[in-house]
Amino acid sequence: MAAKSQPNIPKAKSLDGVTNDRTASQGQWGRAWEVDWFSLASVIFLLLFAPFIVYYFIMACDQYSCALTGPVVDIVTGHARLSDIWAKTPPITRKAAQLYTLWVTFQVLLYTSLPDFCHKFLPGYVGGIQEGAVTPAGVVNKYQINGLQAWLLTHLLWFANAHLLSWFSPTIIFDNWIPLLWCANILGYAVSTFAMVKGYFFPTSARDCKFTGNFFYNYMMGIEFNPRIGKWFDFKLFFNGRPGIVAWTLINLSFAAKQRELHSHVTNAMAIYVIDFFWNETWYLKTIDICHDHFGWYLGWGDCVWLPYLYTLQGLYLVYHPVQLSTPHAVGVLLLGLVGYYIFRVANHQKDLFRRTDGRCLIWGRKPKVIECSYTSADGQRHHSKLLVSGFWGVARHFNYVGDLMGSLAYCLACGGGHLLPYFYIIYMAILLTHRCLRDEHRCASKYGRDWERYTAAVPYRLLPGIF
Image (tube, rainbow, N blue to C red):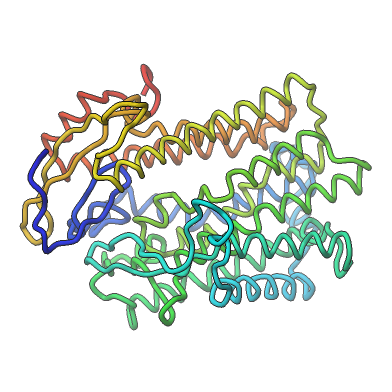
């Protein structure tokens, strides 16, 4: 085993199955210090067109029964004009604004006030006050972990209303879906703008801020690493997990209720989709967004708009096109999702076990194989790390993403093969995770140098063995 880092420097953990030093150099992840022309062009493109993309998908379902080519064909053939499509689009309403304000306020109250209690009766659940990842400047933030409690309480109230209280219709989200889209956009732009202003004038940790001199890049990719208000309200954790993730299942429950209202039953495809997300509810909290990226429009607007509106397209599609899967199809979709979940969960468990025990563990019944590495941190000190090459991490360098992709494909296959729209999710996830693989490879190659070359020789494939 290689020599340890200096004892007076505490250790942190990376996402590569690596034991790292807390003084890891800045600039290895998240966003750049300088902006090249391609990055700037990409940023401007997304700022201009990402909101339109979301609107186009939702409008296509609302006006063209989820036929993606319908609006384009109508405009090209002269059957409709852009003004005609816009005139049919529901505007923001007072009801939607009140509903969205109440929803966000409720989640803020749960986030800031709800004590952790699930750890008392759920073996293995970790809640309460926990330390987060170490920032590039060496800051260790503490978080109040109560997401599971917030999710359970929110859904308990939802079901209580649906079966006992009748305060509102279970279809309320679907019935106000486009007016709520405008509310989500307002919040997304507001929080992104506030985060940028805060980063310039009153940052939580000035040492963790990054400035490029380019307004558009700073706005999109963020300036602060962990912007906070007060001691506990962390923008990144709140907007990554709430309101979007907690709402994910509520959105699909509302879609299922609408399907029942319109067609007198809920098809097995809808049920599979909803149950599968209940099973995977904590997935997003394990992503790079929370662990490495700065907080800007990319996360602020993305969590408020992109995630809840485009990640639920399958459920929206099934309202307009009920799909009753055959038993073999339904079983196959369910098995694909469960196998994907198994790969994702076990791969991350192997990584976490390796981290917690500093490699003193068994993976697949054997002592783990490692690649000893060294790197130089920003302060010029030399440190030692270990890269895991056993278990799923010996199959491919990002094999956990394969589980993500299998689960994403299962969501889409539950919608049958009648339209392209439900398959946006797997296409997007394939692009996103491939891009993240390449980002991670670049970061690690810069960090570990020749040691990374030894690692890639031992584990030659990034994602899919024999292919990529």
